[in-house]
Image (cartoon, rainbow, N blue to C red; front, side):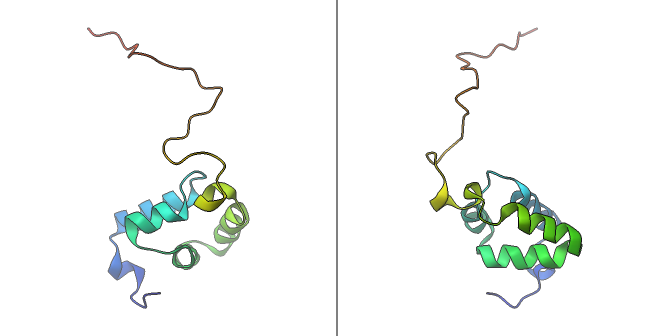
Amino acid sequence: MSTTPYSERFTDRELDRIIEMAWEDRTTFDAIEFQFGLKEQEVIELMRRQMKPSSFRMWRERVQGRSTKHAALRDFEKGTFKSSRQKHITHNKISKR
């Protein structure tokens, strides 16, 4: 784990994106590590430092043990997830003017 403060390692925009990805249900910790080089424990520490304590606790409860945040626990193939209830679109239905 790096001892460099997150504000020196990342821009404000990157920090916002990491936090956004951490809140997203389908974004894995592996994806955050691939894009920003932060392991799961580092993401947790970043969230702890960047969020209010009540928001951090809510986030931790939300992601703890959540299978979609851990690639090894996912029950669907890697790639874009598509619900079986989602309509199949074969062509662009937006009319051209």
